[in-house]
Image 1 (cartoon, rainbow, N blue to C red):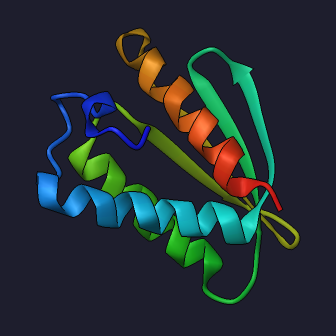
Image 2 (image 1 turned 90 degrees about the vertical axis):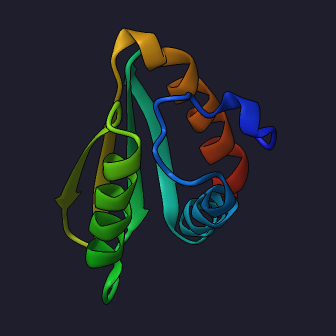
Length: 110
């Protein structure tokens, strides 16, 4: 996923902003990821540690990502000390989700 070629053409984020967005997600996963699961081939579920401002941060990032990559569907669920983040795609973007899962797993290891 370091090669920008994995990004689908439907992504509306300007090319020069993509490395910054990827770094922002990488930082979140490195700091907060507790659990990554694949409830289905077109879905990811992440449990992230909560804390002051974390839910708002995750919601903001998910909203911005959904604006440029409309094929992603995000759901943020706050819990006791946790933030749940569900990410879903359509069948056409299954490979993008698989690449994202691999990146999350690599960045989120503590």
